[in-house]
Length: 301
Image (cartoon, rainbow, N blue to C red; front, side, top):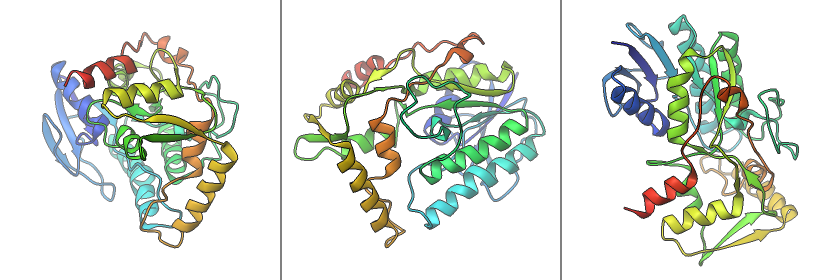
C-alpha cells in the first residue's frame, strides 16, 4: 500500500486531499498540529523538523493564509510557516514533493489576461504573496512539483466565500472597478491535481477550473447559492485604491487587526486574472468541477 504524507491535512485543502487519498486506497499520514479527517496523525509545526518516516509520497499543503498588517505578529508567523516551515519540510523529505503554492505569487498589474507559468514572480502586494513566492522558490530549487491554484473554493471553505458573504451590507455588495474575467479553482480540481502531480516533471503548474468566469456573475452565483439577496455594485477603481491605502495605513496603528480592505484585494478583484492550465493538461490532468457544480451542491442542502 502506498503511504502519502499530507501536511496541513486538518485544513481546508489538505483535508480534501487526505480524504480523497484514503478513498483511493492510500495509507494517509496527516502531518500537522491537529489530526486530519482520516489516517494517522503525525504532530508537526513549522518550528521543528517533521517525521516523514515511511512516506512514499509527500504533499505539502500546510500554509498560513490571510492579509496581515505589515509589521504585525501575524506577518512574522506567516513567514515562519510559509518559508521556514517549507525549508524544514524539504530537508526532512530528502526527495521531491508536491508543493501547493498560489497564483498570488504572480506580479500584479493589468497584463494577466492569460498567465502562463513564465509570468514574473515578483512585486507581490502582501505578505501572503511574498512568503508563498519565497517558499516555492525553495521548493523549485529542491526539484518539487509546484501547483499554483487561484481563489480555491468548495465545501468547508473557511476563507473565500465567508469573506465574500461578510462584505454584504444592507443588501448591497460593492466591487472595485468594472466586471472582469477571473480564474477560480474548485478544491476538488486542486485535490485531483495534487494526487496526479506526484508523477509530473518538476516545475510550476497553474491549476484552475476548466473555464474562467465573469467576476460579477460568479459572485451572483455564490450569493444565490447561499440564499443571500444582494445587489452587486461597482466602486470606481481610484476610490477603491484610495480606500485600500487608507485602510492599510490605519492598520499600522493597530497591527493586531487586519485591514478591512487592502491593495492586494483590490488588485485581485479589479483586474482580469486568467490562468493558462495548458502545462498541467499536457500531463493528462483535466478539471471537471465548476462553480455551477458548487452552487448546485450548496443549494441542495
